[in-house]
Image 1 (cartoon, rainbow, N blue to C red):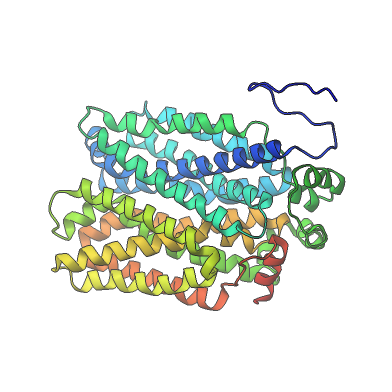
Image 2 (tube, one colour):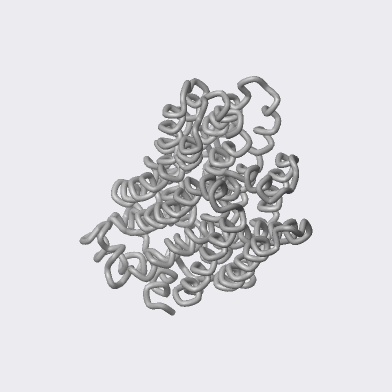
Length: 454
């Protein structure tokens, strides 16, 4: 039987309704994974890029300490708006359009950073980019999770956090390269446009989520996608989950059925990221306050790449040891690390070892921020729930980032570190009582397990 040859510039084609070829399936999954991972990476890149640039920005734009805090916290404040907004839009209108529009905002905002003339402009632009980051959290990982099978889903989703930390570390490297360049901070911040442009190209042509179509009652369209791409979905369980959320919308997050998941996802995520963002954004100030010398650039590079190693370790063990064991013990250990540095600030070995353990284990557990929130909500509420949890996590992070420079000035590094330890203890206690074990469960059944407290 004659066939039409496929060139490298042509999409492989199959008759309408026919199963996709193995090549088409792999291409779709690869494209979706790359589009999501790069999106996650640009989130880390935008947040991490401000660390080494802050000093030069302060000098060039004549920022006060309050303005420094606002510029540092702007993306985190934006996430508070963007997470719930884009999450609800994706649950209502579909994953596909929101997935593309969100990245276009990154592209425009990245370019505009180059042209700012004062702190207010930079704050507003990074605020809007923070809205896009919130949208990325709400739509990127959930879409990928809805195409993933139940086995290996945790490792796949956790790998997104590796991308985040690599983006954060890459921004640190780029920032270091531009530290000696006049106005280099402009090039450093605007360089995220290159990453955004690549990601926009990747996101074209990605189909809608079959699980979302099921949540909207569009069973025939969903089944066509499931059959074509061999997607692993418990169709009956998905259909069972849809009625209540379609009726109640956003309010369903606070219903008796879902409040447990909402509280858990919001609190554990906030407790993980608050110390990391606050200390990381003003690491040079913390470093100097602990009398560790003037080699803060090298220290920030160590900070970033230790985090990459930690989140990679978390990705490797998340399926092997389960979600709860990766979350709860590290909370207690990292709290002890920060407390130890706070009460023994005169010992260089204690500071170095304490921070290294904190960074590594905090990052390892942070792999779960791309896993747990997606598993504890049903499909028709998934991006809304993830968006809300993202927002709540950034409320604390934004407050911490805004207050940290003033806390250092008034109370010193030791007090700031003890507050961070206290936040981690709160995360440990809440997770002990509310964290479900969802390893190897279908998404719909994982949400049911979280809801029932199993």
